Amino acid sequence: MPAMTNARRNAVIGIVVAAVLGSIISTLGGDGGEELGGLPTFAWLVIIAFVVNIAVFVPSFLAKTEHYYDLTGSLTYLTVTLVALATTTDRDLRTVLLTAMIVLWAARLGSFLFRRVTRDGGDGRFDKIKLDGLRFSMAWMLQALWVTLTAGAALAAMTSGAKADLGLVGIIGLVVWLIGFAIEVTADRQKSAFRADPTNRGRFIDVGLWAWSRHPNYFGEITLWLGVAIVAAPVLQGWQYATLVSPVFVFVLLNFVSGVPMLERRSDREWGGQEAYEAYKAKTPVLILRPPR
Image (tube, rainbow, N blue to C red; front, side, top):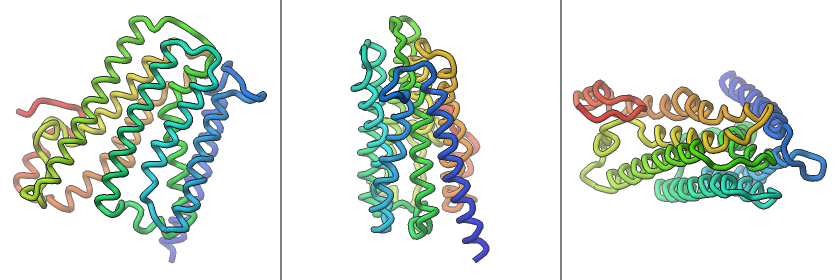
């Protein structure tokens, strides 16, 4: 019982933190930008992100399923980005490019994750929390915050009202995004193919990009969001520059909170102590790609 009480208390804290940070970023990202109905367009986008997740949380909790969690995350990215595009008064090349970058990434990743959870029958992270409305709702609130923070720089740039030629900085950002997107897609496909091979059952993946990094898909995701931030930066103004925290936030979250640590613990439980696995860990970087020695 004490453990459950602590878990529910942490859920309340998580919900409050998500709401507060969402409010702060909505204010900063909308500074000096375009308005809609007397409210910064950026703030409306943040509200939409939270509304979408809360709306899907309700039936998901009633059905005690997490099957639509990742898909809703992608749907949120698509919704806020397309709304930003639709409400922008003067669409330039940068606005269209930022839209394409996020839409392509979100559609690809969302469909990939939904197929995976459908095939595997569920996500072990939600086994306990989906039974508790408070804890489950925290996950959806944090997902809305995740969308707000990661896409923040792009959304702020699209709704800032400022215009500038794409220029060399924009081209560099696009190249960085393309590199990150290619790495993430390649890593995901290699892992799916590895797991689909019956001869690899019970084995850890150490081929392809997974011989260069233990988490190349995460490296790709961090890189592509850095590219988005570079493209967005030239038209940001005032407090909108705070939204450039996007790639830093993705790096910290994936490398220290919900991504790498969780998967590393799972791998250590499954293969820890095995000579081949320990050798793989010793010679392969956790995140940054490096050719195998």
